[in-house]
Image (tube, rainbow over all chains, first blue to last red; front, side, top):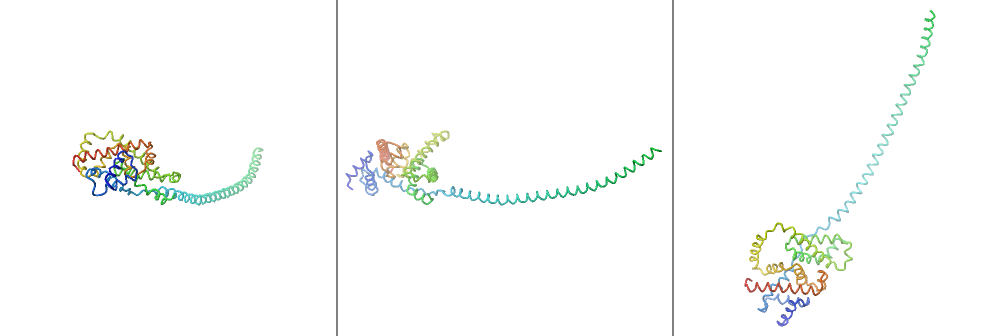
Length: 144
Length: 169
């Protein structure tokens, strides 16, 4: 690349009218070891731009967790739900059995009390005879 | 969109995002955090990402806005803490040390540019974006972009000539 041409492009460069291709030519020119002495001062500028483009982003971005989180959340919810239904049913079942047993026990007790009451009633009937005897005895005493 | 697909879309330009972030935020850690933030934001939108015809331009705009917000909040937060005397002395010492290295010298020159010029110079001279792409990204008119770019390049030139005349390099 002839020097005159470079100077022309350089002028356009500082007026910001050079195209991307022309600017590439400039960078290529200034990346050489041999540069015209009066243009030496621009060398660091163009070299710097080439160096600056080398910089890389090296950090790893943690993208995964967010997705996994929701997936496992639904799994956990499903597990909790099935366990809940299973053990819930079992609980209901035992409760129902208990209730039945309690009712049975109550009925039996009532029966037992009824039996007792019947026997007591039979006892009072017999005492009624005794009352009769007492009355008769009283009449006799009164008459005398 | 699957994770691998997403990475394939993002891979070609994630370095550009990082370089733009670093140009604006200067610190490497800050730039890495910003890039990660942008990539995660993109990932969270990956359902709607196919609708954007140019994901790269979209991501670059996001990075630009994110970093500018970041700078604004950082400046506001730092006002109370920074003593101007202290930082002045420190930075001139640092400048002297760094003057030996032309790359860090250039870095320092670009650091001192206004943010808009910094970004345009980064997009054009480092990433070789076309003018219409820069216009869209920066939300500026073509003439305004050219003026800003020309101004930025001339400032860099002047600083370099100054340094050349000092004979430090």
